[in-house]
Length: 371
Ligand code: NAD
Image (cartoon, rainbow, N blue to C red):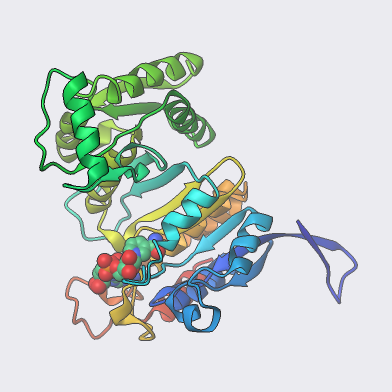
């Protein structure tokens, strides 16, 4: 919390401090457009502006300065514009680093149809809850031919009826009781807090009995603790078909890391693609809100790209901060501009060369004008 006394009035306005990471590539442009839209809702936010990405690397010697991490640690909430993953610098993805550092175990990806968006579907209102820390993404991998890998293969071949070929590479898939319990409980809590009716847990328990089977067993146990919300499970391949054929049957969908990654892109495709896909990475104490898309470096500095995914991410942030009125105001304004189809960026026009397309900042102006 942060307090400020206005010059004209004696009342004390309580401002909540939020870290704004401007990112690189198209990041700074969409971050600024988003900040203006959030401020226009009247949300009482004091922005703590921080840098990360390739643009600060030369100056700071790292794409993720300590002060940026310290700011997120202190403020607990961050809105993050996209950041390029530097290739060949030995630095892993900043996004992955933040997720691990703050144990942001839940990746939230709502996928909703807005009138005026070109898509084959017009009735989607799904929320993907993806586990963010375990599964094949845990980063435990063995390269083919390495001594450790050969030793592991020898051990596995000695302890299993099935045999692994010596030339194999191996990725380990850990799924724990604690990791599953907290993400499935998160899905139920999110459903309850947002007026949702059903949670669907997705798995391949028929094949991977000790990982996905554990996931399914724990999901069922968590469901018993949350009897006010409907629960069901689906096998992942069937789920993909159902989402394409009958997406209206689903509500909140909770998945292990890998299936969550794949199905969140599938669902983004149902609602008009990356330009419309907001997201959040949420932990026990910290939360980082960000668009699903990347830094699109080729469009850097052109005031051209669509700010909607980051603006909708900021709408999720406002909801998370219990600023529901402001969040609704922002969502309605975005929906109105998209439905009109006039003041929208090139990617939302029927023809991408449409000369009436507006820039990033002008689309933000149009959204602000609707509030
Ligand atoms: P990208 O999402 O940056 O861009 C792919 C294409 O999608 C762009 O060329 C553009 O045509 C389109 N696009 C993306 N965002 C758009 C927008 N807001 N409006 C209109 N069109 C848009 O994916 P990429 O090219 O694979 O990745 C570029 C960099 O971003 C990489 O370094 C990658 O690691 C990084 N990345 C960062 C994040 C993040 O910060 N969370 C996420 C994904 C990728």
